[in-house]
Length: 246
Image 1 (cartoon, rainbow, N blue to C red):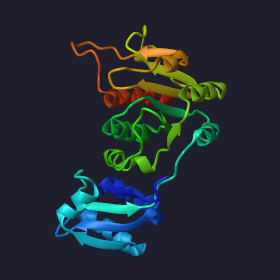
Image 2: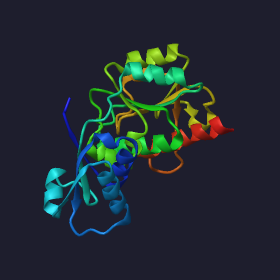
Image 3: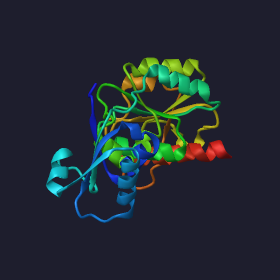
Image 4: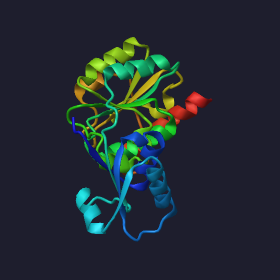
């Protein structure tokens, strides 16, 4: 595991400094930028004894390989890594676990957007396979707008085995598939639920599909045949939220 990582973006750094300031080693800020939220990050960093350096834009760009950093970059200790054991503890700690599982979503922007939506919907954990999936990179953290430091991102070595363990724990596994007969709005989501979303373009892998208790689809009325995975995830998650609150 890396001994340090680069974090950037105002939302992401606000979240880290609020919840885990001890992770931050050094803060690099764009020289001459005046922004109230940026000033707040600088003041908080100094309060926790974190060194602050003011840099030219090129220096910041070089640190994050040209990504959009919003004028603030930090060198930090790696965040907590979550495993299968952590996932089962999360399930046990909640009366009605609410999980999101992404099967092979490789685009970091989509993973970040799904994290942000999942956190807003009250999801207890987001699960991804270790292979053929985007990891928790600085880009994911920035797109997630702070959600990556709130909601556990659990990487599992064998997704099919994890689905079986969740089923044993009483979690109902609902997968999304274009060929499903049942619509999202015909499914009941009032109990312990794990929503499985497939990869961009390919959908869920065969073994993942076979481990689902139920398959659903989004009713598509227009000429477009599919939605971006992060958009579809948002639609499904908030239908689950609606049912859980009623």
